Image 1 (cartoon, rainbow, N blue to C red):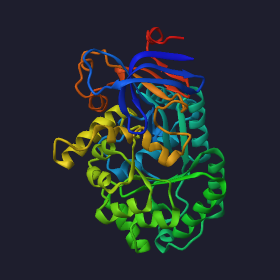
Image 2: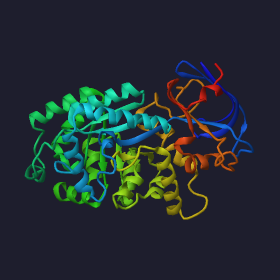
Image 3: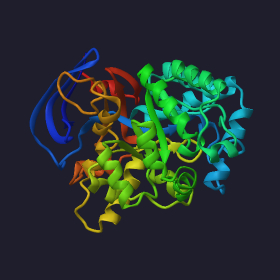
Image 4: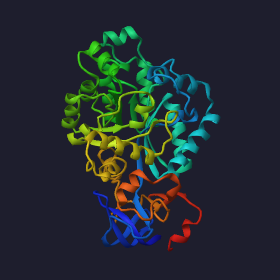
Length: 411
């Protein structure tokens, strides 16, 4: 059991801030949230409790090469087989690799992240390595495995009518045995028949499906040349993904298609900017009503710090809305909290209510840059740094606790 007294808690799916006389958890669940009054501003410092953050698009496998793709294009850095990422991953041993991933997951916990959705390269062994790192750290890794290599040559992909080779089918089955689902870099990596087969395999095993779409115009253009329609339309029709990543160059028709499909999209604005790509149309995507998440993308591009992603996304969205009012900062914060339920289901509510999982982050708003805030949600999104995180809990268990935090907990 643990208890915090006289704290601010962001309560329910709307994340409304309340001053609470008691926030308590027993075992893996929240046992009490005693609300006193709404609290938008602080006259004095306070602890602030928010839902645990979910990073909805990562590639933790390449976190051991920070900034290694500096100066490289998307294709030079990240496309198989000769991209920087894949060449470096092939050169590192498991014994060298695992500690890097473990340390980066611990950093995620240090920055308030309780779980992430990872597009994991290197076939079944890659998924198994990340699963071990997740066990060591307690950070939840939702692992989406990827083929170790592209199963088709360029001519076969251009013809777009071949089924999965038997070796690839066996690898897909092994990936699904080791991982929580399947991912690929783009729809252009497989034929239409192969995508239908992957969809069938994942449906039979009850696993998740995800795909990168519209990261740059080439994704759409190649798909149009091969299949007569863009990569997003192909993905929704053939593959039926639970999660679509990027939407960086999505046009109005594609945004409307995403919204009408009911699919969830994970945005990665810092990664797009780092690669010199266009910034995603956050305003249009928000106005469409689509369920939106945030991710930090490749470890070699960005630190997996969601507070940095929240800040960047909020200010990008404000620029695109073009006024002082929109968006509500809580709408951005929900992209890293409550919106996760749309992909991972009811056991990942991403919000704080009595009886729900005790998965939360304690922030120190006694710090000079936070203690007199006039707008708590805006300060969470734009001013909180990793140093302001006092504790990160997942299912009632601490993933991270700053020195001295236990003195704030009443057993």
